Length: 335
Image (cartoon, rainbow, N blue to C red):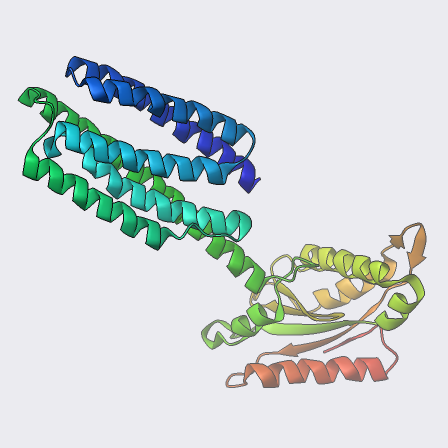
């Protein structure tokens, strides 16, 4: 999906650049800048070739050729028409686009485009071409109105590119941060919260008054894995996770580790007796994996929050009740 977006974006950028170059060719003709009109011909060919690179998904070739030609184009137009036209401004947007592309390349393939080194090269070329234009004056003399219009147009295009690519870069970073947060807080198999997230939730003492937790453990889970295979064990875990989210919809549900789950309820309208309802429904639930019925039950230890009790002590209290239930025959809820 990310590669498809990159290809689509490349088509759009290349089309915009080609359209702009065609328009500039007409402007150069109006300015009687013959060499720039001639230079527009290979420039147009470059952007036509880019369509082939994009179609073949050779995005690296598209990026490198585009960067090289824009730098060359910017330098020559600055020298030919002068500093006042604003063609030198493209180097500023090019550097931002370069770093954006560098991040995109890392996300898509783990590679990099050496953005810092290339940016230094672009900056050096920018300073040299600008110095020549200022020192020697433009090769082609144009009316002041032309330079004013082109300066405004070039500045507008450059700012548009800067805004668009800055937005793209920020969106990509936000998406990456969100994905990292999701990975850090969620269990990959069950899509429940993980132990790390739950420990943070259990330490929010200002919100825990009247709360309760339940520690749940699947009875004889090792036998399920040994008898039916680990895929069956994963199926049981996922199915139980769905049941937990359904029955405990107003609670925070996590996979505590292995075959253990931890439920935190801060909602005073939800009684801990729903754990008995859950235990009963699990016993009645038809766990069927590849045509084989699997008998599943859970033992549950419930503990109410006491002011001043640490998260570790609270969990230890629920754990003691859980194992009391295990020692008394399993498939029970101990309050």
